[in-house]
Image 1 (cartoon, one colour):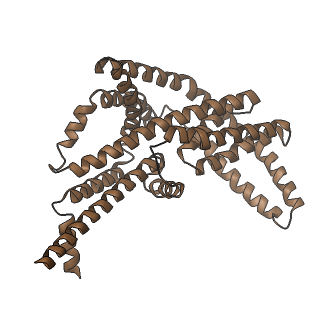
Image 2 (cartoon, rainbow, N blue to C red; image 1 turned 120 degrees about the vertical axis):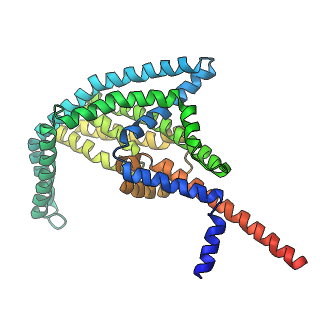
Image 3 (tube, helix red, strand yellow; image 1 turned 180 degrees about the vertical axis):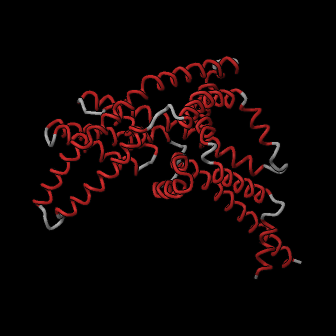
Length: 366
């Protein structure tokens, strides 16, 4: 039994392109597993590089030189990064601090509401359960509040991380875009000489990741603008903060929308109660989410991510557990990688079965 398994493994993997591809995948998984946190700035840079590469390629089609296209796109990118760092981030920090300061009062109002429900439906919700839920809620948010209020950029670690993300990340993005071909050639030098299979898989995966990142960033921006504009028009408290949270919910397909709906509705209820403003907010928010899920996302991702929703949810659970935020962010393209590898495996199995049948038929004819 073991001898037959060993023979099958040697025939299929040792010295074959499929074996080289398998070793490459194992090596990449180990790098992510062991150095994921250290390489987080590199992953951020790669994401932005994929995003900017599409703009550079478009400018090159318009007869711009590569150097001029890279420099123009990078100037726009860096300008937007500076604006976000000095305008958007302070606003988000201010609203987050205001939310934490207002939490005790809002929790009391929420407690009154939940207790009123328990009094109307004591069979389903008891007062003791409500008090336990509120206690857990208060303890979790008090820890969050202490962390936010005690956090200071004057610490060495905070300053170093700020330097890494505001200085090193833009530099890495620039060189990833500018020297893309040279970097890919350097990496290809470490690959086996027989790499037709690797080229095929890489070509498919590279296109999938590039299309996914560009479409996902565009989806985040559109949802952020629509949600923030709606919240500001209604005068909702913490509108900019909630708009960012809603836009980031699209990173987790299907699940993110459900999770983010809860804080939006809670903030709306605590501000207005169950009046006409709350009803309008709920309707507009529901319309935005429906349009995103049924119009915007299919339009942006048409022809790029042909993966069943159940497979997407499973991929989010698996890769999120393995690599945290980056596993969630890249869950869909990683699922497409797994799909491409399964297709290669199936095609390779079919090819071996055809060769086996030919040998068997040839022996019988003799």
